Image (cartoon, rainbow, N blue to C red; front, side):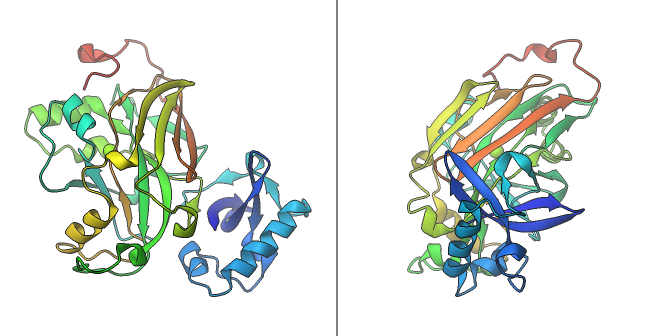
Length: 305
Ligand code: MG
Protein backbone atom coordinates (compact mmCIF):
# COMPACT_ATOMS: atom_id res chain seq x y z
CA UNK A 1 0.00 0.00 0.00
CA UNK A 2 1.19 3.46 -0.96
CA UNK A 3 -0.01 6.33 1.19
CA UNK A 4 0.43 10.08 1.20
CA UNK A 5 -0.87 13.21 2.86
CA UNK A 6 -2.28 15.89 0.58
CA UNK A 7 -3.53 19.41 1.13
CA UNK A 8 -7.24 19.44 0.39
CA UNK A 9 -9.86 22.01 1.38
CA UNK A 10 -7.54 23.61 3.92
CA UNK A 11 -6.64 20.35 5.65
CA UNK A 12 -4.09 17.59 5.37
CA UNK A 13 -5.84 14.42 4.23
CA UNK A 14 -4.61 10.87 4.03
CA UNK A 15 -4.79 9.38 0.54
CA UNK A 16 -3.91 6.18 -1.28
CA UNK A 17 -1.65 6.18 -4.36
CA UNK A 18 -2.89 3.77 -7.04
CA UNK A 19 -0.78 2.80 -10.07
CA UNK A 20 -2.01 4.73 -13.11
CA UNK A 21 0.04 4.45 -16.28
CA UNK A 22 3.55 5.67 -15.55
CA UNK A 23 2.47 7.41 -12.34
CA UNK A 24 -0.14 7.20 -9.62
CA UNK A 25 -3.68 8.39 -9.07
CA UNK A 26 -4.37 9.81 -5.65
CA UNK A 27 -7.53 8.67 -3.87
CA UNK A 28 -8.46 10.36 -0.57
CA UNK A 29 -9.17 7.74 2.07
CA UNK A 30 -12.55 9.19 3.07
CA UNK A 31 -13.74 8.57 -0.48
CA UNK A 32 -12.94 4.87 -0.07
CA UNK A 33 -14.45 4.47 3.38
CA UNK A 34 -15.67 7.45 5.45
CA UNK A 35 -14.94 5.50 8.65
CA UNK A 36 -11.34 4.60 7.70
CA UNK A 37 -8.52 6.03 9.86
CA UNK A 38 -7.07 9.37 8.76
CA UNK A 39 -3.59 8.49 9.97
CA UNK A 40 -1.24 6.47 7.76
CA UNK A 41 0.07 4.22 10.53
CA UNK A 42 -3.43 3.49 11.81
CA UNK A 43 -4.56 2.61 8.31
CA UNK A 44 -1.59 0.31 7.73
CA UNK A 45 -2.59 -1.64 10.85
CA UNK A 46 -6.14 -2.21 9.64
CA UNK A 47 -6.93 -5.87 8.98
CA UNK A 48 -9.04 -4.92 5.95
CA UNK A 49 -6.44 -2.71 4.34
CA UNK A 50 -6.19 -4.93 1.23
CA UNK A 51 -9.92 -4.40 0.66
CA UNK A 52 -9.51 -0.66 1.11
CA UNK A 53 -6.63 -0.66 -1.40
CA UNK A 54 -8.72 -2.67 -3.91
CA UNK A 55 -11.61 -0.25 -3.53
CA UNK A 56 -9.27 2.71 -4.01
CA UNK A 57 -7.88 1.09 -7.17
CA UNK A 58 -11.41 0.75 -8.54
CA UNK A 59 -12.14 4.42 -7.90
CA UNK A 60 -8.81 5.37 -9.49
CA UNK A 61 -9.44 3.25 -12.59
CA UNK A 62 -12.86 4.87 -12.99
CA UNK A 63 -11.31 8.34 -12.57
CA UNK A 64 -14.01 8.84 -9.97
CA UNK A 65 -14.87 12.37 -8.89
CA UNK A 66 -12.70 13.39 -5.95
CA UNK A 67 -9.67 11.37 -7.16
CA UNK A 68 -6.69 13.20 -8.60
CA UNK A 69 -3.79 12.81 -10.99
CA UNK A 70 -0.50 13.01 -9.07
CA UNK A 71 0.32 16.36 -10.69
CA UNK A 72 -2.94 17.90 -9.49
CA UNK A 73 -2.35 17.55 -5.77
CA UNK A 74 -0.20 19.43 -3.29
CA UNK A 75 1.65 16.91 -1.17
CA UNK A 76 2.26 17.34 2.56
CA UNK A 77 5.17 15.48 4.19
CA UNK A 78 4.64 11.71 4.01
CA UNK A 79 5.41 11.33 7.73
CA UNK A 80 4.07 13.07 10.82
CA UNK A 81 3.52 12.70 14.53
CA UNK A 82 7.02 11.35 15.21
CA UNK A 83 8.84 11.85 18.50
CA UNK A 84 12.15 12.18 16.66
CA UNK A 85 13.83 12.20 13.25
CA UNK A 86 17.08 10.28 13.55
CA UNK A 87 19.56 10.80 10.73
CA UNK A 88 22.60 8.70 9.96
CA UNK A 89 25.85 10.40 9.09
CA UNK A 90 28.57 8.51 7.22
CA UNK A 91 26.52 5.36 6.60
CA UNK A 92 27.98 4.78 3.14
CA UNK A 93 31.71 4.07 2.90
CA UNK A 94 32.25 6.08 -0.31
CA UNK A 95 30.48 9.09 1.21
CA UNK A 96 32.56 8.93 4.40
CA UNK A 97 35.71 8.79 2.27
CA UNK A 98 34.70 11.70 0.01
CA UNK A 99 34.46 13.86 3.14
CA UNK A 100 37.85 12.67 4.40
CA UNK A 101 36.33 10.65 7.25
CA UNK A 102 37.12 7.11 8.35
CA UNK A 103 34.03 4.88 7.98
CA UNK A 104 32.59 4.61 11.52
CA UNK A 105 32.56 1.51 13.71
CA UNK A 106 29.22 2.41 15.28
CA UNK A 107 26.33 4.39 13.84
CA UNK A 108 26.93 8.15 13.90
CA UNK A 109 23.70 10.07 14.20
CA UNK A 110 22.25 13.54 14.44
CA UNK A 111 18.65 14.68 14.89
CA UNK A 112 16.54 16.90 12.67
CA UNK A 113 13.51 18.77 14.02
CA UNK A 114 9.96 18.49 12.64
CA UNK A 115 10.38 22.08 11.41
CA UNK A 116 12.54 20.65 8.63
CA UNK A 117 9.73 18.56 7.15
CA UNK A 118 8.36 19.57 3.75
CA UNK A 119 6.25 17.87 1.14
CA UNK A 120 7.10 16.51 -2.28
CA UNK A 121 6.94 19.44 -4.70
CA UNK A 122 7.38 22.12 -2.02
CA UNK A 123 9.77 24.94 -2.81
CA UNK A 124 12.67 24.99 -0.35
CA UNK A 125 13.64 28.44 0.81
CA UNK A 126 17.32 29.18 1.53
CA UNK A 127 17.71 31.96 4.14
CA UNK A 128 20.13 34.77 3.27
CA UNK A 129 22.45 33.83 6.16
CA UNK A 130 23.62 30.70 4.33
CA UNK A 131 25.22 30.47 0.89
CA UNK A 132 25.35 26.77 0.11
CA UNK A 133 22.63 24.12 0.20
CA UNK A 134 23.64 20.52 -0.59
CA UNK A 135 21.45 17.58 -1.59
CA UNK A 136 21.64 14.24 0.27
CA UNK A 137 19.27 11.57 -1.07
CA UNK A 138 18.30 9.02 1.60
CA UNK A 139 16.02 6.06 2.20
CA UNK A 140 13.75 6.62 5.19
CA UNK A 141 12.38 3.91 7.45
CA UNK A 142 9.37 4.66 9.64
CA UNK A 143 9.11 2.75 12.92
CA UNK A 144 5.83 0.86 13.31
CA UNK A 145 5.84 0.05 17.02
CA UNK A 146 7.69 1.04 20.16
CA UNK A 147 11.03 -0.75 20.32
CA UNK A 148 13.58 -0.88 23.08
CA UNK A 149 16.46 -3.34 22.90
CA UNK A 150 15.41 -5.07 19.72
CA UNK A 151 16.97 -8.51 20.11
CA UNK A 152 19.37 -10.09 17.63
CA UNK A 153 16.95 -12.97 17.19
CA UNK A 154 13.95 -10.71 16.62
CA UNK A 155 12.78 -9.97 13.10
CA UNK A 156 13.41 -6.22 12.67
CA UNK A 157 10.90 -6.15 9.83
CA UNK A 158 8.06 -6.49 12.35
CA UNK A 159 9.09 -3.08 13.72
CA UNK A 160 8.82 -1.27 10.37
CA UNK A 161 5.67 0.60 9.29
CA UNK A 162 7.01 1.61 5.91
CA UNK A 163 9.57 3.38 3.77
CA UNK A 164 9.89 6.78 2.17
CA UNK A 165 12.41 9.12 0.54
CA UNK A 166 14.14 12.10 2.17
CA UNK A 167 16.41 14.83 0.90
CA UNK A 168 18.57 15.61 3.95
CA UNK A 169 19.31 19.16 2.80
CA UNK A 170 22.36 20.68 4.42
CA UNK A 171 23.77 24.19 4.77
CA UNK A 172 27.25 22.91 3.93
CA UNK A 173 28.91 26.29 4.58
CA UNK A 174 27.62 26.26 8.17
CA UNK A 175 28.44 22.61 8.65
CA UNK A 176 32.05 22.82 7.47
CA UNK A 177 32.72 25.99 9.46
CA UNK A 178 31.26 24.38 12.60
CA UNK A 179 33.22 21.16 12.11
CA UNK A 180 36.40 23.16 11.68
CA UNK A 181 35.67 25.12 14.86
CA UNK A 182 34.83 21.83 16.65
CA UNK A 183 31.32 23.04 17.29
CA UNK A 184 28.18 20.92 16.95
CA UNK A 185 26.83 21.35 13.41
CA UNK A 186 23.13 20.74 14.09
CA UNK A 187 22.11 24.14 12.73
CA UNK A 188 23.28 23.20 9.23
CA UNK A 189 20.72 20.37 9.22
CA UNK A 190 17.89 22.15 11.04
CA UNK A 191 16.77 24.95 8.76
CA UNK A 192 13.01 25.11 8.04
CA UNK A 193 12.10 22.87 5.12
CA UNK A 194 15.52 21.19 4.89
CA UNK A 195 14.02 17.70 5.25
CA UNK A 196 11.45 17.09 2.52
CA UNK A 197 9.97 13.57 2.76
CA UNK A 198 7.72 11.78 0.29
CA UNK A 199 5.75 11.65 -1.85
CA UNK A 200 4.74 8.26 -0.44
CA UNK A 201 4.88 6.15 2.67
CA UNK A 202 5.14 2.66 1.20
CA UNK A 203 4.28 -0.44 3.21
CA UNK A 204 6.96 -3.12 3.61
CA UNK A 205 5.13 -5.69 1.46
CA UNK A 206 5.82 -3.43 -1.54
CA UNK A 207 9.52 -3.21 -0.70
CA UNK A 208 10.66 -6.84 -0.50
CA UNK A 209 14.33 -5.94 0.03
CA UNK A 210 15.01 -2.39 1.29
CA UNK A 211 18.69 -3.27 1.23
CA UNK A 212 18.66 -3.66 -2.55
CA UNK A 213 17.25 -0.41 -3.94
CA UNK A 214 18.80 1.88 -6.52
CA UNK A 215 19.25 5.41 -5.24
CA UNK A 216 19.72 8.25 -7.66
CA UNK A 217 19.84 12.02 -7.21
CA UNK A 218 19.57 14.45 -10.10
CA UNK A 219 19.92 18.22 -10.06
CA UNK A 220 18.22 19.82 -13.07
CA UNK A 221 18.40 16.44 -14.76
CA UNK A 222 22.12 15.90 -14.15
CA UNK A 223 22.98 12.76 -12.18
CA UNK A 224 24.82 13.69 -8.97
CA UNK A 225 24.44 10.61 -6.76
CA UNK A 226 23.96 7.04 -7.94
CA UNK A 227 24.31 4.09 -5.62
CA UNK A 228 22.44 1.24 -3.99
CA UNK A 229 21.06 0.82 -0.49
CA UNK A 230 23.05 -2.42 -0.46
CA UNK A 231 26.10 -0.24 0.22
CA UNK A 232 24.99 0.97 3.65
CA UNK A 233 27.56 0.30 6.37
CA UNK A 234 24.82 -0.35 8.95
CA UNK A 235 21.76 -1.96 7.38
CA UNK A 236 18.21 -1.53 8.57
CA UNK A 237 18.23 -4.38 11.10
CA UNK A 238 21.52 -3.41 12.66
CA UNK A 239 20.46 0.22 12.89
CA UNK A 240 17.21 -0.64 14.65
CA UNK A 241 19.04 -2.95 17.06
CA UNK A 242 21.89 -0.58 17.86
CA UNK A 243 19.70 2.52 18.18
CA UNK A 244 17.03 0.80 20.26
CA UNK A 245 19.72 -0.39 22.68
CA UNK A 246 20.20 3.27 23.64
CA UNK A 247 17.01 5.14 22.77
CA UNK A 248 13.44 3.94 22.76
CA UNK A 249 12.18 4.14 19.21
CA UNK A 250 8.54 5.19 19.21
CA UNK A 251 5.86 4.31 16.69
CA UNK A 252 6.10 6.93 13.94
CA UNK A 253 9.75 7.75 14.51
CA UNK A 254 11.67 8.44 11.33
CA UNK A 255 15.14 7.15 10.57
CA UNK A 256 16.98 8.61 7.58
CA UNK A 257 19.56 5.98 6.72
CA UNK A 258 22.32 8.20 5.31
CA UNK A 259 23.46 9.32 1.89
CA UNK A 260 25.90 7.79 -0.61
CA UNK A 261 28.75 9.70 -2.26
CA UNK A 262 28.21 12.50 -4.75
CA UNK A 263 26.85 15.20 -2.46
CA UNK A 264 27.07 18.72 -3.84
CA UNK A 265 25.42 22.13 -4.00
CA UNK A 266 22.08 23.03 -5.55
CA UNK A 267 21.95 26.35 -7.41
CA UNK A 268 19.26 29.00 -6.95
CA UNK A 269 16.19 27.80 -8.85
CA UNK A 270 17.60 24.27 -9.16
CA UNK A 271 15.35 21.21 -8.92
CA UNK A 272 16.52 18.18 -6.96
CA UNK A 273 15.04 14.79 -7.69
CA UNK A 274 15.71 11.83 -5.37
CA UNK A 275 14.59 8.49 -6.80
CA UNK A 276 14.79 5.33 -4.70
CA UNK A 277 13.76 2.11 -6.42
CA UNK A 278 10.01 1.60 -6.24
CA UNK A 279 9.66 3.66 -3.07
CA UNK A 280 9.26 6.86 -5.02
CA UNK A 281 10.70 10.01 -6.53
CA UNK A 282 10.91 13.12 -4.37
CA UNK A 283 11.23 16.41 -6.22
CA UNK A 284 11.83 19.88 -4.75
CA UNK A 285 12.94 23.21 -6.14
CA UNK A 286 15.39 25.34 -4.21
CA UNK A 287 15.01 29.10 -4.00
CA UNK A 288 17.56 31.45 -2.44
CA UNK A 289 15.52 34.03 -0.55
CA UNK A 290 17.70 36.96 -1.57
CA UNK A 291 18.94 35.63 -4.86
CA UNK A 292 22.46 34.45 -5.33
CA UNK A 293 24.94 37.10 -6.33
CA UNK A 294 28.45 36.12 -5.37
CA UNK A 295 28.86 32.47 -6.29
CA UNK A 296 29.95 29.89 -3.76
CA UNK A 297 32.01 31.43 -1.03
CA UNK A 298 35.13 29.85 0.46
CA UNK A 299 36.02 28.25 -2.87
CA UNK A 300 33.59 25.31 -2.59
CA UNK A 301 33.21 23.41 -5.81
CA UNK A 302 30.74 20.74 -6.79
CA UNK A 303 31.63 17.39 -5.22
CA UNK A 304 34.04 18.90 -2.74
CA UNK A 305 33.08 18.70 0.89
MG1 MG B 1 22.45 12.90 5.43
